[in-house]
Amino acid sequence: MAENVKALRGAKGLSLSELATRAGLGKSTMSQLEAGKGNPSIETLLAVAAALQVPFGQLVEPVAPRVRVIRSGQGIHVDAESSAMHVELLTSSNRRGSFELYVLESEPGAAHAAAPHVQGAVEHLLILSGRMRVGPADGAVEVGPGDLATFAGDVDHRYETLEPGTRAVMLMEYE
Image: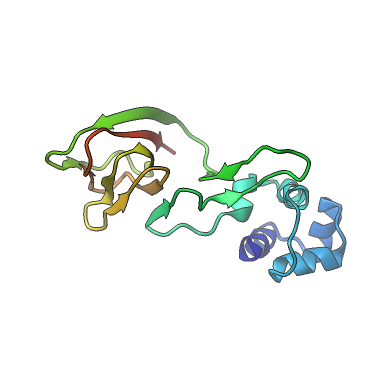
């Protein structure tokens, strides 16, 4: 998160003082946040995201590798201090475009080889039950219940069902 804040501040051409003022925070608090020190509240992070005019997820999510897998329970916890609600951010996007949401039900058998979709397409697959091997043809990963895999959909990729009764939710994101 500290690296994201620093990079986003730099990309916006803001000084540390300017960002602190816009977020309604002290310069020392902002400095500690960028240094990765302390434990900022969700409210502090939301103020920084608003000051940078970026979605919250862009502020706190690490830069994603080629295929990103979020294992069940390993998302970014963004629980509010004043609520008993548990919230876990799995993915976010700063892109503007269209999307398609699917429910997949699949049984073991031959792997499905998928041709590239349009340039810039990204696939997000959340496993509800069962197991699959998914991702780019040369780098597929195994995912299970509660895991989220995010990968480029504009390259050759594959879906292989490993357990009977596998169910998933798939979000196709387009630029």
